[in-house]
Amino acid sequence: MGSRSTIFSPEGRLYQVEYALESISKLPSSLRSQLAGPDSSWFSGLTRRHLPSGHAGTVVGILAPGPSATPFNTSEESTDAMAVDTTETETPATPAPAQSAAAKKKEEEEKAERARKYPGPARAGIVLAAEKKVTSKLLEKDKGSSEKIFPINGNIISAAAGFTSDANSLVNFSRNAAQSHLMSYNEDMPVEQLVQKVCDLKQGYTQFGGLRPFGVSFLFAGHDPHHQLQLYASDPSGNYSGWKATCIGANNSTAQSLLRQDHRDDIGLDEAMGLALKVLSKTMDSTSLDSEKLEFATLTIDSETGLPIAHVFKPHEIDALLEKEGLAKKPEEATA
Image (tube, rainbow, N blue to C red; front, side, top):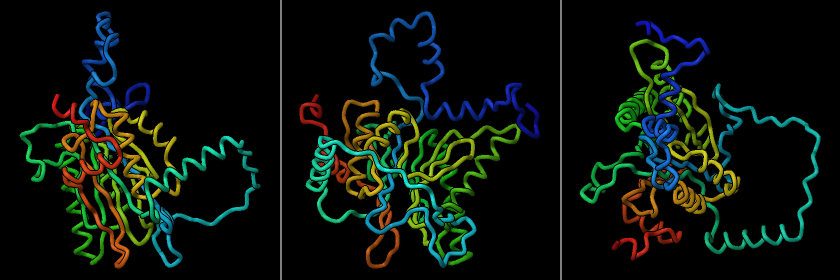
């Protein structure tokens, strides 16, 4: 490798970037080689829960628009150059497929069950839920043991999957950028502008020789007056994209499939919290969920001031939420 820039392979690939992406979502290379090698017969008796998931846990993000929020849309008064053009174009209407009586009945039953489980008007917000890879009874849970979820600014929180040391460096960079913008313009930094700034830095580390890509992916949950509630995902290559619901880290393809099945455009915050826990319960490399293995946070909007409120859950709040969703560790499991 040269000292000035990285070099493409003859096939047009950047291997370092691909390795960084795989370190987040794949098994360790040593184990992959064993699974593919001639001595892989020992693997036949193992299930997915017996296998380590590399350096990253699973991180889920779900945007709940609520009854009135319009995520990723801009107001008419906005002059933001990054605003999305929401002008509707005339397209031929396609008739909706007719539903059978059984399908209608099932849909009504599901709607009634949601109304019973999550009563009241749907709240707007964003949910971030993450699997902790470092768990110990000796950890002080309430003091500095956060591994996955990081507040960035008053209007932005993030969740990381990958190398925590790399995440800490980028989180500090993000916080400095947000505070610099606040000091210069006396307003919170727009969410996409911050995400773009972080991704520019990450992309630079894929371009120059003597550097390695950051081995971490992020979910950014934020709110600003331009686009309201927003959820972004970024990877080590410096790419980013906006999502209604997504997952990064280990077992992300399984989680994405579950989200596609159960996510709805009109989902409320309380239901989104339950969905995030349901997805983690089916994708984590653990047989049970508790506050030792989870980090959880929400970003909501104050109904009176209209300002965003970020809340990182305490361990007892996570346990109460798991109990409410019927996913808490059973007494016999706790004493085993």
